[in-house]
Image 1 (cartoon, one colour):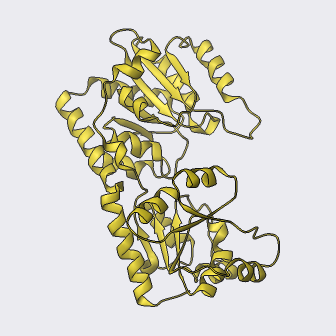
Image 2: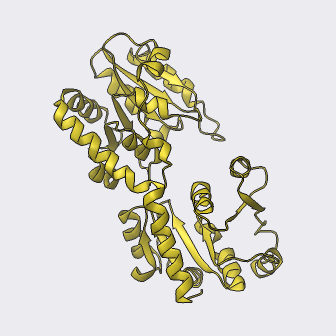
Image 3: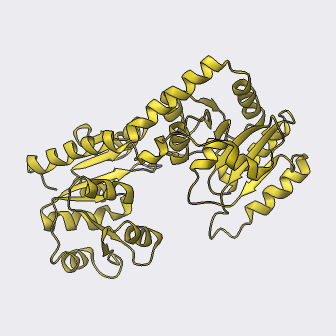
Length: 349
């Protein structure tokens, strides 16, 4: 959401972002010099009272939200402001939302924007949103993801890899559902010159030290010397540029931003056949494997290792072309067209 707020502001629109004071989003917004306003505590009193007390001196044509839990409050605020309500869906909808109170909340939405066609189909099947209000626009990627790659040796040198090493990588939280254990099992099936890089920190507040569990698993599998663990870092672009392949190992990922980043960096991608990953890799030229299947994952890595240079170049170009749809030059005009149509139509929730 903050990326789109910055893009729209830079495109000349007046943008104000409501976020919790002191949160990571608040701090990032300050760094980007966005206009910020504190989010209200919508549980502190009735929605009607909260909405009426929050909106004084606020004015907007469009109220844009990312969390379905905000629908009831945002519906009241948008109605009071006379603004169109836009919901940008980035997570799956696991259950049907067609109870009477769902119809009341969802009818106030003027545009429901999904990041994938799969999410649109899910929205139409499980919510009261109709086809006319449901749209598909990809998640944003800054232009820096498409900058020419630096020399790969810089980050690889930090790993002290042996000459001729083939490097697979996974970026994201260390968590049992993120599939790093399966990656280690796959590594045990791969040739000795294959190494695996894990970049990420433990999931916060789940009372589990997954990093320690992964270290122990690597030792027991005999791959500790080929499994490399780095803490999460702000700039992961050099990580992608060091890789020969990227793997999305999650049990299910709605829209893997890291998958889009890898495609933009022209890194061949292997992903689990679950969530939104199949749609990303079908368009982006990647390979799919069943979740939690170490043998299939190892086989997919070997296929990439043996792929002819010409075929590999086609795969990389296809991935980059798909990711390019997420760039500002593509997304900003598409969003501007959608938002302008909502404002001009005069349809208010």
